[in-house]
Image 1 (cartoon, rainbow, N blue to C red):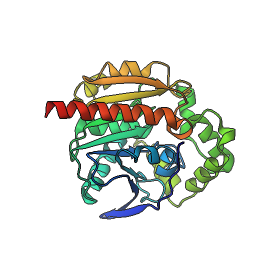
Image 2 (image 1 turned 135 degrees about the vertical axis):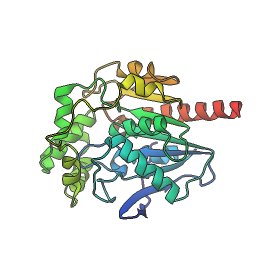
Image 3 (image 1 turned 90 degrees about the vertical axis):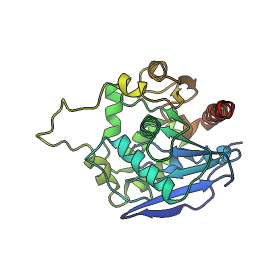
Image 4 (image 1 turned 45 degrees about the vertical axis):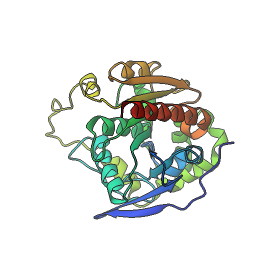
Length: 289
């Protein structure tokens, strides 16, 4: 039986930035899982992971922050670097600040958080990441353009919170409490502005000065990476996980029941694949050490 989060969030400050986070599970666990939520309007660690955290915490220490711009964390955005890298920098500083120590730290993210997890594992910012799991986070690859564009607009109404949620789960009619909490999160001062401002483009910005090709970037990621696809994901084209896994030296792909964010409404399948993957990475690292 999947449980629910019943623990209050903690907070820590990184200078002017405040990060709110959950810290559950055994403090002496050799594997720590850092959960990074999706980037939709109104999202938070609780909305993304409340049914996943209790199960993972039976085996691992689990850290789940509200990303900058979301929930109870500070509302800000970064314009001087790609958003996934920016959030990875903050998370690395956050983990160091709160003193997270373990033989292995794994990044597990949903949608935008999944892309941030893979980016962190590739760049190895701060303490080295043992592995990454990306649930519906394709680093911009294989997007269903029309559907994905629908995530980029939000008018802060309850009905629009329902529409956003419907893009992430299979049956939005079963998630009215979630919809209401997403709506409340979307009204927090600075949240809408932080997310909307991130899409502002300077008129003289050089469009050609983008990042290297995705395949080149992923080829430099030497940590094990698992890409997880929801079988009914309407935001990404089918098979994107196999394509990205083939670009990573130690890439793997799996499909689970659910839509774009199966961690929300189909948590059992997500818990199973994350546990199996993290335990396999842990076993492999112990053999090599």
